[in-house]
Length: 164
Image: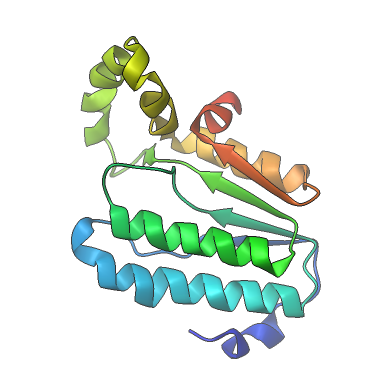
């Protein structure tokens, strides 16, 4: 994917929402993260800058994280591209979104509850917590309705606060 392949399709607008990524991420898809996820954010940022987009919304991932290193690294690079571009942006950082086809992580909820009670694991349990699809949609809508000055990070606790 190249910015010029769709730059003409991105007209000046208030907001550009980037949701492109490798489906069902796993450690085995490290090459796809670089060839799909990273290339798409590079093209999107270039197109958004060219079109003078006022607000860029990027679906990233919670960081730092003990697993999925290649995925986290590519999303971090995407965030750095956005910061370097000078675009006003909202960066959403969920860890795992629960919903249709993604039910098995509900089994992890008791472990998250225990980790939230231990001071040494509390921060990680909050940062890498599970969010629902409704909470994620609420966070995106809230980001769209409230563009920032500069770059704003919305992490798991803030995503959960949107309700849903």
